[in-house]
Length: 300
Image 1 (tube, rainbow, N blue to C red):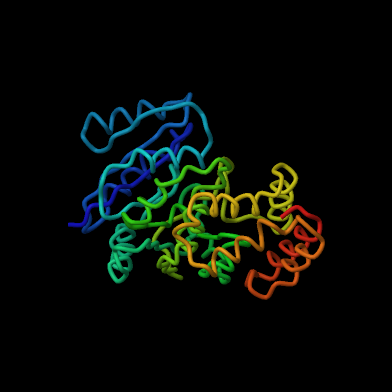
Image 2 (cartoon, one colour):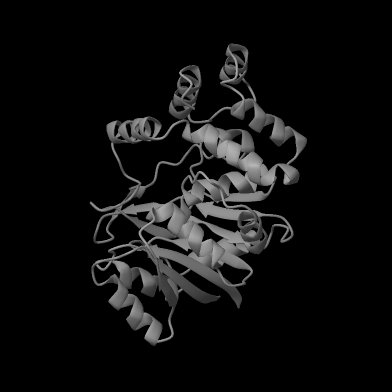
């Protein structure tokens, strides 16, 4: 069977952790290697991990609290060799066929090129009762779209060894969310990407979600505004990191797109070039409006 390394970051996840680990270990037709990094838990999470490790079900290590994005990236840098990799949150529930379906899609792609699979999610309440399918009708599958925003959900991702190797090449100084970074890198390198409109994961919605799938329109706008306010030009900084780490591997066209973003604040003319660019856009109307507005205000 195909070996899949599942990378999980935990933090005070005692409530749902065992159920999620069991759902991973029960995946069909794959050889599971579960590697967990604990991000400084103070509850019983470590005791749970120790019990599974003693039974030979997983390997885990701990570190300082560096938040999810950096914790998952640390897992990537410490991941053992395999053909396929997947991210896991600590509080979801995977249907038994999740990984085998992911791998089937990846096998249709060139293994010598970066490749990624990701899917829709089934939103579920704290007891895993069905709420709805996530509203994910605008999928960003081109680099032009990913420059503006990435909506690949990390807990649905499965990717090949080549993408992991390319991620290890460069450690970004400015860290965006791990899933958004992998999505951008894969497309910047003209890698292969497959989106599955179906879902094989129950994406648990509860009060402690870091980023939940079900939120009101007001909460989503507040979250976007908070990111813009808290971090100076987060999206253009992410694109600048792409150039710093991967310019030598990128096509001329993708380099030019990045330059259009990175240099947009150098002059009024450069800003308006990006503002009215037909090459860089989002298929999601609301996100595209935010993109144009933040460019105009010099906040992109």
